[in-house]
Image 1 (tube, rainbow, N blue to C red):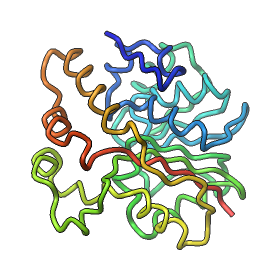
Image 2: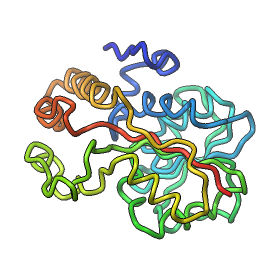
Image 3: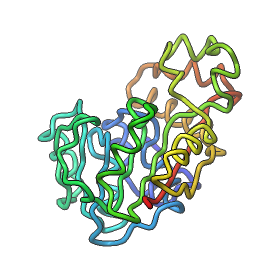
Image 4: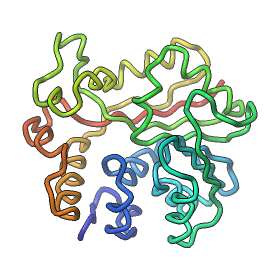
Length: 244
C-alpha cells in the first residue's frame, strides 16, 4: 500500500497500513502538513489535538514538532488511542475522551489547538470560537483543516445531488474559506493568519479514498461522491489564527 505524496514529504514517511487502519476522516496527515506553513509549533509547547480520532495526527504533532499533545476525542476510547500511539514509539501524548463543548482544561492552558477533519461537526456555531479561544494563551495559535465547498450552499440554493447522497444535510457545514474568515474575524478575539482553500484538496481526498478502498477490499463510501464531483465543489479549507 502506497500513500507517498510528493506534496507532503513528512507524511510520506509514515506507514500507510497504520494510517489507513486508523482512518476516521480523509488524509489527516496530509492536511496537518498543509497547515504546517501556517503555524509556528516549537518543542515543549502544549498542543490540544481536538477530534484526534485514533491518534495519527497526535503522533505526527509529537514526533515532527516535539510538542506535548493532549489528544481529545469523543468517539475513540482513550486506551485504544493510547495503544495506537504507543505502537509508533511516541509517548508524549495524553489521550482522553472529551466532548468539544465541555473540554476539561484550564483557561489559557494551550499554546496551540489543532483540529483536522472534525471542526465542521461543532465549530460552525457562532459561539464556539469564543469558547475554544478561552483555552489558548494570549498569542496562542488555532489551526483547522476542514472539508469545504468552493461555493456556499446558501448561494447555490441547494446541496448538489452527489454530495447530498453521501452526507445529506451535513454538507451545510462545509463552508468556503471566506465564510470561516468572517466567522472568526467578527469576534475580534483572534487575528486570522490564513483562510484559503487547499488547491489539491479534492485530488488528495480522491487519492485517499481510492487507497482506503484498496486497503479494505471494498469501495469507500466517499468515492462515488468524489468521482462525480471532479473538483467542482469539494475541497478543504486551511484556517489559522492567533488569539489577541
